[in-house]
Length: 315
Ligand SMILES: Nc1ncnc2c1ncn2[C@@H]1O[C@H](COP(=O)(O)OP(=O)(O)O)[C@@H](O)[C@H]1O
Ligand SMILES: [Mg+2]
Image (cartoon, rainbow, N blue to C red; front, side, top):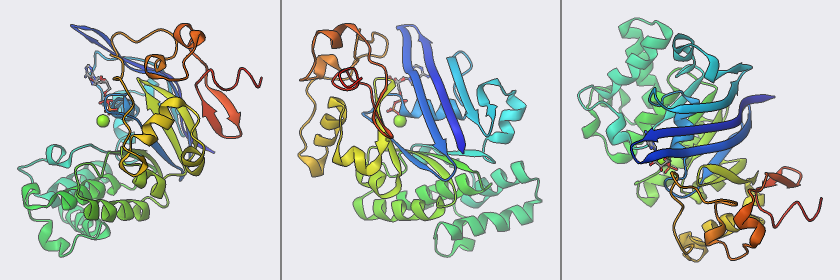
């Protein structure tokens, strides 16, 4: 059954330089307990998509489309109703724990506060639950550590604390935004292993640069480029048989796959090119790619790609 259904989502930011078209006609479908990876270069709209699902974007943002969650369109909920969804139904583990944790609050208090807010527990019970949450993310001497401030935590521990906070109200869906960014390899692997364990019974939208982590955790992967999804398939299929030239380029740019960067840069989201957004950087581009924008085509069961090299010909 569908847990989250994003339909034709568009997120545009009016700015002095022009309209930043951060997310364009995005469709996503997630089942309960499914882990969906969202990958793509910096600035392609991953965080904005996550924040939009949480409805955490600034008020003047232009949002169109639908975000169905357990049968309700989140974009149509009142702010009061949405508050009940945040944390309890859907939690977001934000990018960069150093700035997301409150520096003047003890780590345990921050988690206890989240629990109290949503579950109406008294202070002592909420604190005890917070300590349990820290234990659940394998922070040693959690009782003592809970009394510390974020700066007393290492990067890996801060990330664990963020995960604990996300899990505190037992949401059905976690949106994790680059949870392994900036961590060294060993700590990264620990965090990935931990995440995998704690979200086993949940659905997760896993935003990452780290393809190794995505391969380890995700059932499916969606590849984003310049504000839209260009390919989506099961994880093994994406790695074995990447179809979109951007996906191929992105994979080849990774350290363990040749470190070959894609020539050129992503287009400005204010001035999006006509046709396929990737055509200026694509070796396979033909005339049609400059002029027309491809639909998402299901090339084989469960494997979708937005590229004129596929689909039209077989149809
Ligand atoms: N509040 C905002 N106002 C204007 N532009 C924004 C805002 N937030 C994000 N953007 C722009 O939207 C695009 C997507 O950003 P983001 O989702 O953060 O990318 P990433 O894929 O790296 O997470 C970027 O070009 C970014 O500059
Ligand atoms: Mg981001």
